[in-house]
Length: 142
Image (cartoon, rainbow, N blue to C red):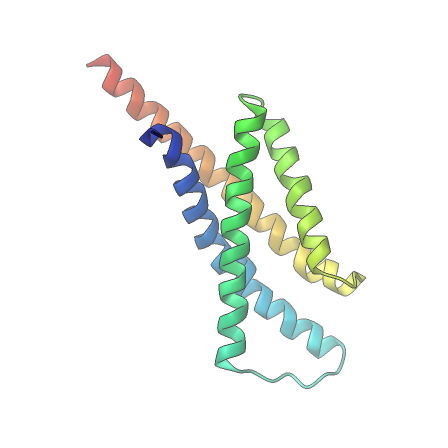
């Protein structure tokens, strides 16, 4: 049977990833798509259903990226730079696959969203880990 300590990081990573993905990859992705349409002179329509789909896909991508982050930390152990590098490479490969055909406009609009997502996720994850470590030390000291 899996312990809470084993499962908790995966739940936390998925939830944090989905929340940040909704904001940065979903809402930000929708704004980037509008920017591409405007730059290409295409009609810039708006539909609630279409925008909701993009935001939900951003949440799903964020959830997947959050799980990739947790997995990379498990693989790299205490070597966080390796974990971050592995996370960045895997997410970059997936992002580039989703941007096909790749061009400068798409790279300029979408890659910053993934970068901001990754930085926020990493910083919040580090804060979470520090809080859990402090909590663990407090419990063991009593």
